[in-house]
Image (cartoon, rainbow, N blue to C red; front, top):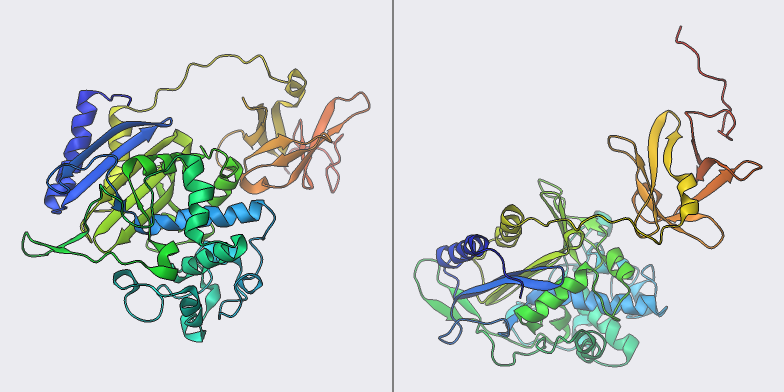
Length: 452
């Protein structure tokens, strides 16, 4: 494990210790990863009379949903389904059969948050048929197209979709397709020693109450998994794009795109395809929080910084949401990332240099650069505006990867001698000088003149 400065470790430990002592958490483990390595991890409190370790299991609750989402996206990438497909195509007979798989993944299907019957997190779960039979007209909100509404039920349904599509229980599919390839040997559906016991802490006295840990049955895909710090660190790396052969990194990047927004006082959080999203002090975090009776957990990844944070605790309530982001802030304050030394590259396509430099969209200056990975970047010369990166196509065109022009085609216009004269970006014409009269600017160019 890469060692941080003693002063950094002390600052992080103090934040962890304050969280555990002030909120009376029986045990708490937290840590940070950077560039694929755990750079700090520490614990407070005890499990079975001793400090927990990175191999101690905690229940991770709704972090389970991220694994189910990956199983669905694997089916999508294999061509077995489309996110626009209706649920009825795979799991017929519910009141949300006309909702798309993508809507269920992003919690925008209008489905109720909790299943009918008793408090599912504290009682033994039923079969998939039992669950599906309760998803009737009462399980839908009056206006399904309302945007974000978190639904545990939806991921119970998606677990059944995976089971039917693969012809095996979703837990077996999870083990075969994700856990084994990634080496996550300590992530399981039921606790395997050493593991923490879940507790509720009395609000007015320093005593604890053991919480039940039932098999959730058909609702297990919403929050059943147990895991360790080491396995969650591997999962944070996965969310950042270190996906092994489980998913293409581009698919995980797609999962990190906002699909719905939690419309609270500030638009700081949202949901992608099975991943929670949060913006914090310029960071774009992806991951998930988790809670089950007796347990709290969080894993956040910052792909841009190749950084992640994890915490796990055996308490029903008490750990503040700020713990994870505070640890990231302390790392950034005490030991910010030092950029790698710049070096010229020998694999740059020199023919691309003729495209670089200044271009104008109408009177607005843009700059086109060649990035280190061979992509083109077209961004406003100064200020904010429409910026996108582009990937080359075999036919000489370019496809937008992000921003306003994601998925759009960029074509390079040339004169008779082959010199680039303009860029045609989905009908928008960029020219070397503002409204160049020699370029095919729609409407024509009458020429510049003084204002009257």
